[in-house]
Amino acid sequence: MTYRPPVRDMAFALNEVAGLSALAGRGPFADLSPELVEAVMEEGAKLAAEVLAPLNRSGDAEGAKLKNGGASVPSGFAAAYRQWVAGGWGSLAATPDYGGQGLPVSLAVAMQEMWNAACMSFGLCPILSQGAIEALTAHGTDEQKQLYLAKLVSGEWTGTMNLTEPQAGSDLNALKTKAVPQGDGTYRITGTKIFITYGDHDMTDNIVHLVLARLPDAPPGTRGISLFLVPKFLVNSDGSLGARNDAHCIGLEEKLGIHGSPTCVMSFGETTGALGTLIGEENRGLACMFTMMNNARLLVGTQGVAIAEAAYQHALAYAKERKQGRPLGSTLAPGDMAPIVEHPDIRRMLLTMKASTEAARAICYATGVAIDTAHAGETAEIRAAAQARADLLTPIAKSFSTDIGCEVASLGVQIHGGMGFIEETGAAQFLRDARILPIYEGTNGIQAIDLVSRKLPLGNGSVAQGFIAEMRMTAKTARQSNRKTLAAIGAALDAALDTLDKATAYMLAQLKAAPNDCLAGATPYLRLFGTVAGGHYLAQGALKTAEEDGQGGFAATRLALADFYALNILPGVHGLLGPATAGAETLYALTADEFS
Image (cartoon, rainbow, N blue to C red):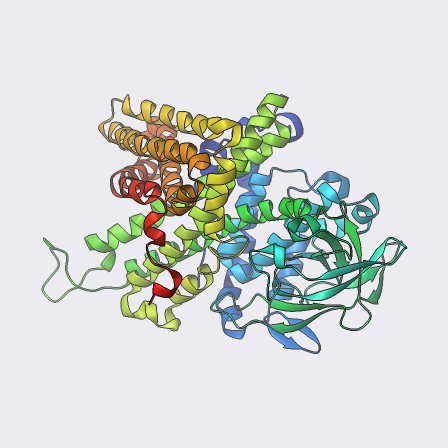
């Protein structure tokens, strides 16, 4: 499979649409420039296209294996990982205190798109490590930071997140893994965790597990969960590796997709008990873990963008090559056939793929820039507003973008026709790989609940309303353009915002009066919000390049994508208003026993 990172599209979305250029040259990003951002992307694109992309197909076919008491990654993964580490790619956004480069989170997000578009099974590993870095940076002890952070930042060691248990999926109240204090600052961890991505592998010397467990006297429910650092190999005070810890992979899941990524069943403490140390405070583990999960949720949203981009490139290449039929009005000689890209329905699907991918990319990058601004904004007020924006956008970035990843991958199969259903073409792998994205790191239903129950009420609704007002300004600017196409885009965005306003008002009003009605409409509401936000960012992109009209190429593409989205995708939000505001009554019209 070939994949070429669309560096110009990505750099434009990051610098101009998401707004990273506004932070360049200031504060901690004093040495940053849009040109440097693009140069970093160009260098990463070489690794993604030349080293990682060739592993996608072979890694899927070979898969991760369980052998010699541990997990082994497919051929080529370990060598590629060493190149990735040598390039310093894991350290982009990490603090310089532990060997990081101190570059923006949003740039690291863009690079994660490249790794995952090239080979999602490979790209998963850095995502988990990045989350571990975030959690330790925010909550780790000085000793933990000194022993582990530099190795995690460099990529010499990798990190994991161990939440799920056989009886405890999304509901962590049922978590049973135990942690018994040993009186010397360490704890003995015993229990089983499932679905642990890269829980074991043979790419690095050590793996740093972050494990949720309960103390013997912990209160029930999520109030009694603590977070522990449990290394595969114990680490001596001088940083050298010690004895093998009692933490083992005892099985690999057989999955629909991401076959190259080892998804492990982890056993902690089958013999002596796995030794670990507490991260943060006792019984405050969930707060620590959410630092890791929020980072991971944005990066999983970025995986949705990645798989969509890869599926689009694959489908476009096929559509240009595959000849079938003759479009109406064709001047081809009798018996000749045209590439299927010339047929209207194929073009509709390709434009849907491209516009949806660009919309999701902008949402993810904008979330990353909001996180950067929350850290680097010039005033406390700016930083607080940016953090609130990041909080609002995170569930949208995760859910909307991963749904888009699945839908775009499915369209890619459709464009291939019957051959798309055949593994040989590679189109099916994108769909298989994409299907996990709406599930892990908090299902998209949970993201929707988070949006309506926790994020909409921020500032008594002012955070969401402020973003809607910002989108109104984009619509107004476009509507007032003397260019017919931009004016039409603005009008369509305005109409969509009217619908979003109605749905938002409903959610805020019902949140206390009838919260179950909010939860019943949460998923269509999130899709509505994400679709409108995507239209806003595409319109911004068209406006940014409006002065280049007549030059064709990039500016023409921005305008065409925004126009297609406004006329073909944005109108769908009006049909989402009903489901978002229908309430819960019809969902409970049948009892559980009456379902058949």
